[in-house]
Length: 176
Image (tube, rainbow, N blue to C red):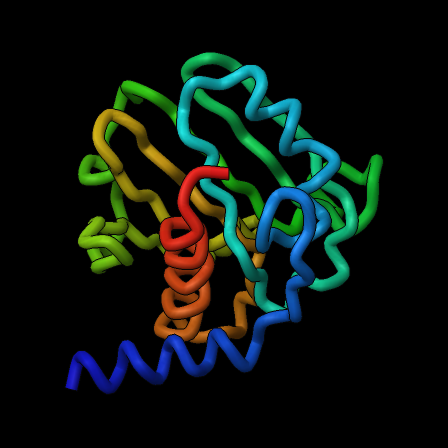
């Protein structure tokens, strides 16, 4: 039954993904290209970015570097430049030797990711405003995090399937 659920999640993700053209960095969405070289030049952490993004994010046209340092990086995608959190679509982060483990966080669900990695999923959470869906995964001493601004009306199982597929895409693509 678990294999059937995993297969359905992969098929659903494939149906939601945009086509990705091969470019100088290999198979990577073009939105990452303006920032990739700068991040790679400043960090010693392996840069993991997805090969594909769900169609939901096809209008995300701007990438921004929040951090590019020896011990980690953060790259965010936005629908509009200069609109701050209102235009936020997604983020991809890594921290070497983090001060916390995702196991310490509340409201998480453990799941298996590609290459035998364990992920920790937290769905969209709405209070005064909605926090994005999150997925953390540890690879050696590095903690990776993916955030996706998904609709709060999307059930948790579909949120988990989408964010896990994005993370798996990055894991399977390997370091950029």
